[in-house]
Length: 524
Image 1 (tube, rainbow, N blue to C red):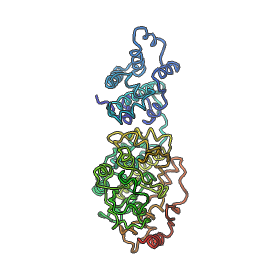
Image 2: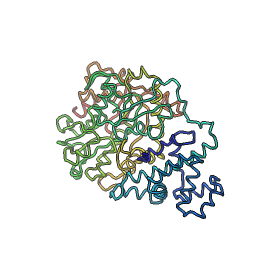
Image 3: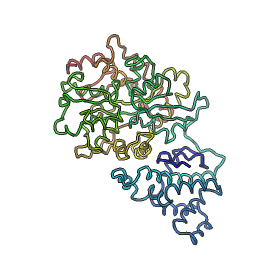
Image 4: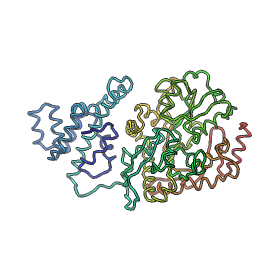
């Protein structure tokens, strides 16, 4: 029998669960439990979960055996198969006390941090014990709920559409925190909430995402915000119409510099001669890096070398001295700090607070063939984005994301990004709660700024470019607002706005004049 290998997977216990509710209810129930196993059992006794005759077993059992026996009696409900399943879980964890101590013990957080830093104990083993504890607690809750109401399903909070064209989907993603709503929707049950069985597929780089999209190997995609524009216009690839359905994250990137330059880099002019990694030519990272360098009098095409580096390779490139700096999505900026090879020179929120980064996207053909499924999956992701935007949920989300099949990163690194409390690599501890945000609304002014900078840096011809048409055709702002409203959120009533950047103001009504003013002021 395979035991759940991570905390996030402990949610998937429905096949053994007697209750009727969302998978994330398991997670929320687990988070509300007392930290001490003794208090936990005491509370269950006070609640009347255990009858007095069950407590008589304490006369003949040791304390550990009593806890295990009481738990199994409650969970099994007289079902031998369920009881044996739980015994197998406990055995796999090395005993009930081992599992409960890992999950609820007062030193659990400290212990977990130590396992990551010094490697004296297998992180997977620790996560396994936590997962076992979570599964057991969830099953205990479910058996009680199921016995009270076997015939009444609890409210899922969503009307599952009955007209979905398909329910089995594959969504490609890059393992970065920008993908949080897309990725967390699998382990935390947001896709299931809308009647979908989604497999998120880890991809090696953005070129692979683009090529798999064109080849029809994926149903939908985690993309950089400029990619739907580039692909629809046939820039860097064959023409392939793609719609940007919702924004995944705002902010959440940084300019990270190799630690050897800590005493020499103070501003953009100091990057002259640097080798700089960005994730992809058609990325906010490339555009923002160029924007910053130009303000220091540098020509990004001649005074530095900017080239694509897949985010998962970026820290290794810095370690091997192949890049001097990078503008990358997190968690790789924080990972460079964690490894002692780089420091955070600037968060991109300090270049443009509220800027878009990644997006959820799908091809026009797929949307046409699967309109109801597209609407459902977009709604699930927008719902997840709202959940992720709440600071109270960030630590739980971090724990769900660190597993190997998702981000495969140390918990302290992902927590530092999501909570905004982090080390900068220069000995400072910073607190920036909005280091990353998850606002799904796709402002059409985002599309216009992106297009203007693609023209500025010759990534797109400026001759006859129709900024308004690009924004209207590719960014599905109205649909996102409609879904947000259905979810009880409050989307903006306007579709575009003036954007305030560090060095200028963008007026979406006249992108061409904005580019001309930039070239006049900065020389390019």
